[in-house]
Length: 240
Length: 245
Image 1: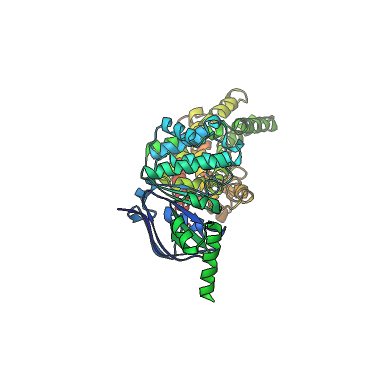
Image 2: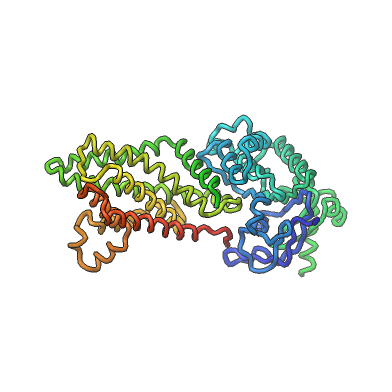
């Protein structure tokens, strides 16, 4: 089976507003797929659908061959929420070890994951005392430690310094090379080029679903920010 | 359901508390001070302290654990950790039982410290044993915890959460028989008193005060307290939704 996520006709309303307007796409296994678009375009809602925590109006979301939200998927899918969700009154290590115990991962592996996200020096500190970037990485460690087959990461690199950001993207690709599928959202276009595939969203619709090279070719520009703009303008041209 | 995950959750909650020394100190010191205050308030008639002090040993844990749990659970909801937990393999009941066990441990320590002080230093006198008072105190703490867990689902902010204490617990304190004996209340008040669990907690403690050996009424009351806690926990589990809008 080569498809990790299969979405058909996905429609979602939140707070009486249509947030996703009938999406169809596939995410292939073992890739890093970027979910890009401005704030409010529906990225987080789409990710919540894949994790199975979002009520949907219609459509199907199939994840690793099973309907999203199936109990057995909870071991196979890791979800990083946009705002860090770890216990501020526990240390980084205590957080990691607690979530590790829920996945049946050993304390030693939990400690290693803390090192992997660059928090070796902060492992004994209370999460509430960390900087924003460290806080986010503590949350990321707790998502990755179950070694899930599918990682849904909502803006994992926000607030990280450029060196760490490059480091994290390197790690994402290592994971993908080893067979993990990653769906990573960002509202920063300069991260788009780091993805194997791109899903560009705007206003609850998919504007593009292609490789970065493919998008550059169709739009005739090397700059992905500019490419996004041209795609949106082209679509609005059709609508008029 | 998994015992490992339940115990891991209990350990996690206790670790969170361990980093918050002041809260631990307050859990132990506040009831102690209040009880001392009561003792000297009724200095002229120690029998009044024997009645009210004893009841307070059961009321304190229920109120304190109610407040702690409703705030802790609200924090789990607002910080996103609850949503994260619900995307992991953990079962909802593991979360609730984890909380229940953690607060049972804390209330056991509290009951041990506070009742020992009450008996030894403040001269509290009951026919029944201190151990029974401790068991009832832990039962009350678990009930308070379960009620706090349940009502936290209806609070959107800390302002709302703390106000569930006067809304849910204060009426129980008023009609539980502490101020006016239940049999002297008008019929409808008695009926309300009959369906509120704290009435049975107070009755159970009164039984320990009056009888050297555990009575049938005491065991029945304890069963009602535990039953009410289980109902509140199940209702609390129903408020934990994996999928939301």
